[in-house]
Each structure stands twice: as C-alpha cells, then as structure tokens.
Image 1: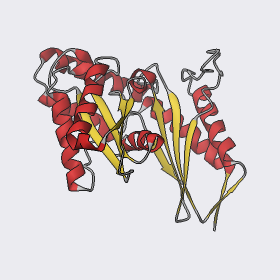
Image 2: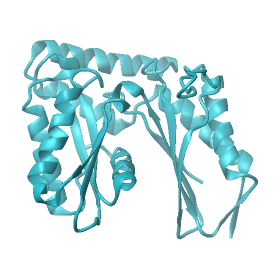
Image 3: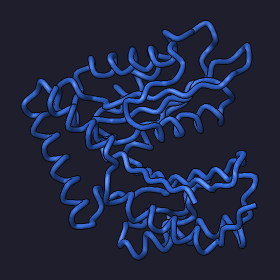
Image 4: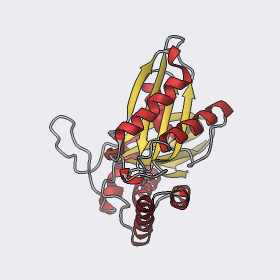
Length: 278
C-alpha cells in the first residue's frame, strides 16, 4: 500500500494548471510545425507561423498561450493500492484554485444561471476512475470555450453506420467554422450511452497527437474523417488552406443494439494538457 498526502496532490495539480496554460506539449508543437510545412495557402502558413511564435513566447516568458485559460478538466486514475491521506477531491480543487491564482490565469468559471464568477476558477470538472496498481495518475486539460461550445452529440440510428458517423463529425467541424480557432484537434466518442459517448470524446483528446487507435478499423476511420475535414478547405482560423484539423482521435465503447451514440469534442490549436504520475 502506498500513501500519498493530499497536500502533495494539491501541489502537483497547481503545477499542472500553471504549466498547462503556458507550455504546449512537444507533440502539439511538432504537429503545428508539420502543418505549416505542408500548408498550401500563404495566408494560412503565415497564421501558423504566428501561432508557433505565440507558443514560443508563452513558454519563454511564462504567460498563457491563450487568454482563455479555460475550465480545468481533471482526469484521475487512482490505483487500488493507493491510500490518500486526506480529502482527494478537496486536494484537487485546492490545486486548481492555487494554480490559477498564483499563475495569474484568467478565472472563467461562473454560475450557469446568475453568471456570477466563482472567483477561483473552481470547481474543476473531475473524472475519477479506480485502476489496479499503486500509482496516482492525474491529467489536467484546460478547456477553453471557443472550442468547447462547438462540441455536439447525436443519437444516430444503427443503420447510419460508419458513413453516418463520418458525416456527423465532419459536419460538426464544418459548422464550427473559425469559432474553435483552427487548426483543431477533434475528439470523437462512439458507443456506450449518451453520457459515455461525451466522456469518450473528451478522453480521446488526451492521446498524443497523431497516434492512431490500436484497432486498425478505428484508425482507418480516424484517417478518413481527418481527410474529409481538411478537404473542406476552411483552414487555419477559417482563412482557407488544407489544415483545418491537426488530428482526429476516436474512442469506442460497446453500445445497445438499437443505438449509435456519437459525440464530438473539439479542441483549439492551443491544445493544452499536462500530466503527472505520483
């Protein structure tokens, strides 16, 4: 049995929040560079150069890549042989609060009816899963709402098949236009139930960019959707070109014989995520 103090968890989450806001992961930067190199539109290529320069300045000067530092979405995989000394939930929320405060990150969380700001960017959205082992893995995904607001979910009839899934995802991205600040990353959840599909779509965003699904048929579907999206020609920031999306990641789960849930969770070019294993 491994014991982890709640204070250590808070400190880890605080650092994740501050780092995620200012430093894009290498796979994101490499994807942006690759997009710039293959871009056919001069305007879009210039736009990608600006995005890369922005990311470099943010990292060097420790300032947010984007002013929308998002809702903190926290995924936690808790090993069954881990004992948390203290309140795990409270520790995560305290880490988010401290990270957004000490990092001078914009606090955007408010009551959905009164619109009164909580002033702390909490509560964070936390997803907890028990897993085998003696480690605690935490992934923090700041979700800006220019992209989050463009997400969608459909309960398709099974007769729609994979063609219907592709059509729905491509249409969601096409309808989003420039709102999610393309080039985007598209998370797709397929199967399960209404809420499971939505969670799968968000989990899909945690996969390293361009890493295909382990199932060959699912990987082929990802490639097909990505090609269809980029063929729309909407491009970087809606300026045209062949880089509307950097990647499409799809996660699946068994579903009911009478159902075909499909969810789309879109992420902007500033695809911020950080993780730690304690």
